[in-house]
Each structure stands twice: as structure tokens, then as C-alpha cells.
Length: 377
Image (cartoon, rainbow, N blue to C red; front, side):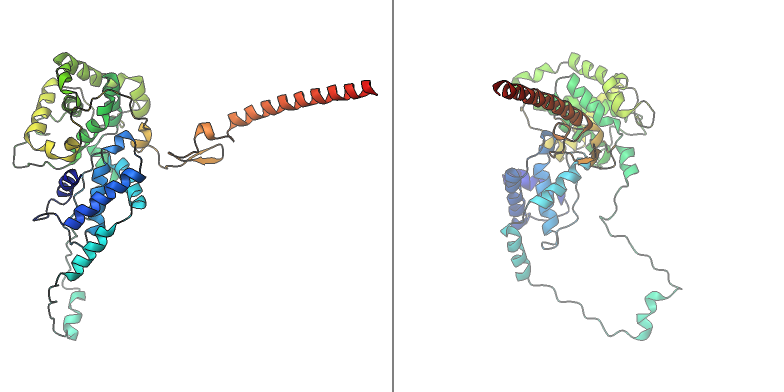
């Protein structure tokens, strides 16, 4: 179990020199075991289980073990990962590994504190002098991309087009891995920047629909059973490109993205040559060493049912997670769903109709009893 954990921890703290602390590995293993017993996830969230547990272990021990900056690049969309991480943080308990780390930290001899002389009045007020402006260096790791910056890197239509492609090509199980790969290549720094980029704005081949086609083929071939990998012929690849090219005309996609240019920012016609460029980029610059690719289950198959995910919600189109229907709050993943909302307008109308029928039946039976009693008298 510790091998994928260790690999994920190494990716989370790449600046850590030497071997990983045993306490960190033990805590991540413990959190992973707890999560399998306590936390049930959707199929498209399952690929982030190991990553979230490792990330949580790093966060909980970063002060005690003096870990370097945590560089998080989750294998699922940021919005979904934030919810998953918060869920794990609330549910999973820290085991004895943390206590062991605390004891280890306390037993390590600390460095002597540097001695400073007693400051005089002039030195004390020197930092407040107006003649010497203060230049503070912002702390590393506290800069976060704003929501518009993230949306500019990851267009909103990508998820719908990817989902439409996987449905049309009957490769539903590949959907979360394809989406993770596309978003990683668009938003993460290159693992091997010293190698010349195969795809760039300057070269004019940074075609996002072509990227989706490239990642689809790479992921599907990896997930196919070994005896069926030849199924992805050039004809199938052309079919996938045609599906992507026609996605903007698809009713299901347009309904969720809209027809305006704002929702389709970054969309352009698919160019076959750009697909080849993305293939060279992924294979040649270390992108397959990241978690999105390492989490693709080799030979597991791509057929099955598409996970029931609310695409509008994943795209961040809803401002609130709570929906008010019929005067009651209905939250995702709770019992407050339409079929259980007995106070909705439709349910109340059905109840009134049923009540009238029952009262009429009772009145009829009561009248029959009265007639029988009068006849007996």
C-alpha cells in the first residue's frame, strides 16, 4: 500500500531532500485505510483518494516535521477536489503516527537561539522611519490564482465536451482521467521545462480541442485490456475527432454551456496536426510522470456506465450548494431530493386527490351502515 503513497508524497513535496519521514508515510497509510472504511466516493472521485490522504498527511505534519512547501496538483478538477479534501479533513482522524512524530520532534536537539544585544531607543524606532521605505517579500506559497485566472486557463466548456466525447465513443470510465489530464496540461507547470516545448502559443498549435483528442486516445489505450488495444484504430481516432469538432452543435452540450462566445472561450476548430503535437508534448516532456497519468488503471477497461455527475455544478455555475424547492432546502448527496420531497406542489396535489377519494369512500360506507341499521330497526 505504501508504494503509491510514497510516490504521491514525493510529488506533493518535491523540494524535500532525503528519504521521506516514516511518520509521514505511516500517517498517510492510516488515513487511506480509514477513508476506505468511512468515506464512500463517486467513481470520478475515487482516483483522488490516495492523493487526498497524502495531501492531508502533509498538511497535518508539515509543522512538526518541518516539511517544505506543499505543491498540490490534484488529479481531479479543483472544485471537486476542494470538497473531497474538506470531507476527508472532517471525517478522518489522526492516528498514533502524529503523536510519534511529535515525540520525535521533541527529542531532536534544537539549535541554540542567536543572541541579540539590548536595542537602544534609536534602533527600536529605526524600522518606523519614514525616510527608509520597507520592502517586504511576500511569503512563498501564499499566492493563489484568482477564479478568473483559473477559468482563463481551463475553459468552462471542456468538461461538457469531454463528457460528450466519452458517451459518444462508449468509453465512459475514461472520462475522469481524460478530464484530469486535460486540466493538468492546461494549468500545471511543465515537469521538464528544460526540454523545448512541442506545443505553445508562439507556435500556434496550442489547440485545446486537439488536446482533448490526444488525451482521450492515450488514456483509452492505456485502460483497454491488452488484447483489445488494437481496437483504437485510425478510424476510431477520426471518429473521436469528428465528435469533438461537432460538439458545439450538439444539443446536450449547448444546453449546458450556452451559445454565446463567453461560454466557449478558447474554442477553435480541431486541427489534426495539433493532435500529433500534443502527443509529442505529453510523451516527451515528462507529463506522464504526474498523478493524472499514474492514476490511470492500466488494462481495467473503459466500458460501463457514466458516473451521474451534475455537470453544471462541477463547472461552478451554481453559486450555492443548497437548492430551495417547495420551501425546503434540498442539498446534494442528502435525502432531500425530489422523490423524497413530500411537501412539493405535485406531492400535495396527489395527496389532496387521494384524500378526497378516501373521504368519499368512507362516506359511502357510513351511508351503507346507516341504511342497514334502519332496516334492522
